[in-house]
Length: 59
Image (cartoon, rainbow, N blue to C red; front, side, top):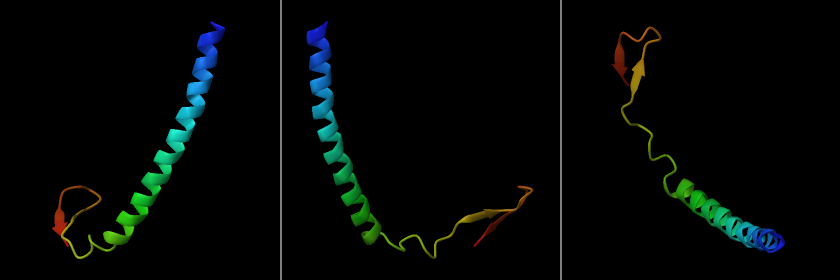
């Protein structure tokens, strides 16, 4: 049982390193995507519903 717990603790340390690197890479790609697609969805048609939900206007 002690061997299993030691192996799990050791693997959690390695997993934490991998997760840190993964989160860092995702943040870099997210910042890149924000810069590339900034303002891309402006001036597009979207549905605007009335509060009662009976009419739909296109803007």
